[in-house]
Length: 476
Image (cartoon, rainbow, N blue to C red; front, side):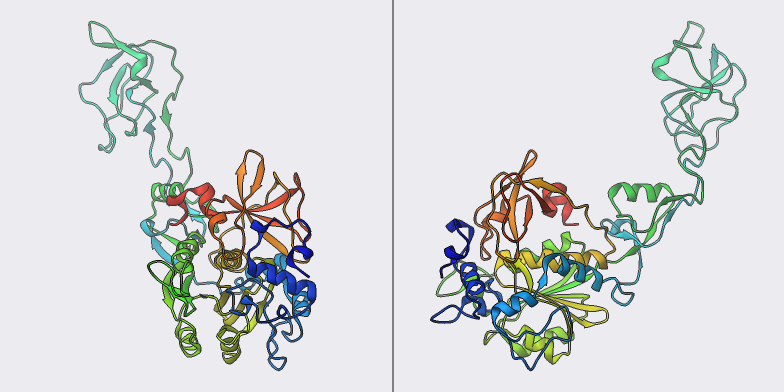
């Protein structure tokens, strides 16, 4: 059976060879295509169903299931895409997993989440102030104007007597016994230097009374609020120098693979590492602090040493998640007696991703080595886990109709790059597991259910961080 035979009418641009081989294995129920080994055996170099591992080494977690048997059996034991995201978020909600709150200066708090309510430390404003440039006046006009004026930040002004006015600046303290503030454009002086209003005035006009915005002790924001630039301004106005916040989860990235180059053009069977440059800023956009990016090659001892020495809250590995001869992630996790929470997800690309608990307060997300498959793993497992660790709220789910139909996998969810045009999502080509061309132009990923989606069908979308916030805003 051919890959085209498994999905009638499939466009060649929709799949690369490795995903096609994965579909062949789904159709045949065999662990490898006829005549040789699948590229998917390279631990995430492909997106096919991982070849089974030894039946003598089952996962400790019911979520992962037994990895013995053929690919079709493992496909049904793999975790569904929605459940995988739920498991990842739940894994970070235990008291041991979540980092303890820290006290940070306002300059370092942007993008964090408040760990305690923001309570006003003073009345706002803390004294009666002028809302406009003009004159503070007492009683009915016309008024005699004092020679001196009142500026913002000056000492307490003397009280006004009836029939008296004084020049005042916006934000300046209101003199006692002031009736109202007359705006500069609403007053005129006569030849005798007397001030007259040019329109009717109201008592208390353009005066911001003490406590108008809040009183000392009022709760301004609840715990869990994101610290935005506006929150920083409010905190400063309310008297804060530091904030109690949930710290950024610490993430270490381990890039695996002897075939990866860090510079220059691909040559002689070597390829450029796309994940090393891509993952750190993407992880930062998810609220993480990336402590290091290390390239280990295909070295089981180096991987074991790196994992055991890491103090990160989350370790992210790339490649090595299947069961080929140089795929060291599963054997290393078994050696560490790690608990596999998710071992394979029913999603394309990215099927051989995994989530493991190394310690009560430390997790590992194993991403496939192919770039778009790795993005799928990042959004499926790392994003909900990091969101929960950082106490960030989950984004509101939303849907849009598709402009064109999208072919689906027979059993698995597909994540397809799309651009948003008006009230529709337009699927993009170049969406194979090894391709980044589609997602580089995308605004979101469409969550295509098993079997595909027709044109006009409402489809769930996952926004990409930079699509709405902008490049400068999303990587803080």
